[in-house]
Amino acid sequence: MRILLASHNYLPNHAAGTEVYTAQIAAKLAARGHEVSVFTTEKEISTPHLTLRRRVHAGITVHELVNNLHYGEFRETWDEPRIDARFAEVLELCTPDVVHFQHLMYLSIGCVAEARRRGTPVVFTLHDYWLQCARFGQRVHADSSICRTIDFARCGDCLSSFKFAQSPLERRAGALLTGLRSATGVDLGRAAVRVSRLLAREPCPRPESAAESGAGPGPDRGDLAARLAQEVEQRDRDFRERLLPLVDRFLSPSRFLREEFIRWGLAPERISFLRTGIDLEHFRPRPRTPSPVLWVTFLGTLALHKGLHVLLDAWERLEPALRARGRLKIVGPSRHHPEYVRALEQRADALGVELAGALAREAVAEELANTDLLVVPSVWFENSPLVILEALAARTPLLVSDIGGMAELVEEGVSGFRFPVGDSAALARRLSALLQDRGPLDRLYRSEEPVKRVDDDAAQLEECYFQALEAARARNADKEHPA
Image (cartoon, rainbow, N blue to C red; front, side, top):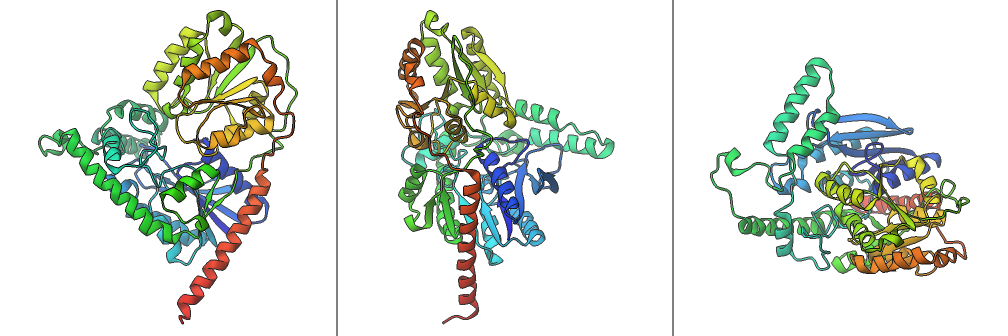
């Protein structure tokens, strides 16, 4: 079977949960004898926008589309015909038997239509809430509070501080770098990314300011929010009317997310719960070296929705003598949210917290083995965090926010503990108790935690693909021979 996996980003430059999962599934499906390829995007301002290129990663052919966020209007963030056309080129080249979308962010709703126009069945795994929420699919308001009920008016206000497109200054810088690369062969891509982040600090969702467009004074915040509210409502309507009918099967890695999408309006029989599988051989339990201090670790992206500030708040609440009984280590990439990271770094330095930086994928298992307590303090509806699944496989004690898929994965007193989301005082009390008495940690994992193998995941996906193919054949036959 020829399988095309589509994701917003991919390894090696992007190693968050969806990207890692997509790569693992690609490898396992290929090992089962299928011809697997990947369609993804990359932001690289020294390369012309919408350049389509091909590379190979870990034996898998990757079709990479350069998306520098050259959007002329907000609608193009979910409906961009130029991206649809590029995806159509890849479909013509790969002629897949099935297309499995992992994420549509940075892509376009029309990509799904392009697949179905060719009679190709479509499977879609929902890794977050992007179909419901334009702000990275996290359902977190601009003030970092959780969006528990979707309200288009509130969405408009939230998005009025959200920068979705490159500014004209960023585009001009990119054009200059592209010209330099073309003329000299010198690629300043990495430097360009750093410059781009400096230029991108202003929280403006419009692709160009009123002064730069020559249009005079721009609309005030209220007018902008009202306009965006209308566009978000149209976005929601587009997904319901143009995307949902074209997907043969939706998959959800958590029961929580499945229920949220059913509540949103997706028919229960169209979305299946399919737990994420991981590489159990790599994350098997390892012997732990006794330590006189309690090693507490945060492992993830240094971003607001990951809640690291909640952990630092809790750590700061501890008495200094109690803090001395433990060591807090922060592990993860810091390149995405510079202002947030700078504030974290200052606080971490004042508290004597170790900032270890990004970690290579192959080193994650060892890091978990050296961790006495992994804290996952996310402040959004996490779906099925890969780091929690890997910690369960490694038998690493967990302390997680009591919300979403995290609460579903971590059973109190069995594999770890939970605390109310965003409550640094409650988290501090948990940490204080464990720093004083490690006994509860030693009593965890009395029985083996059932963690799914990625091989089993691939086998279940394979069955799902065959079912989708059968449905597509029946659908196509009905078209050819209508009753």
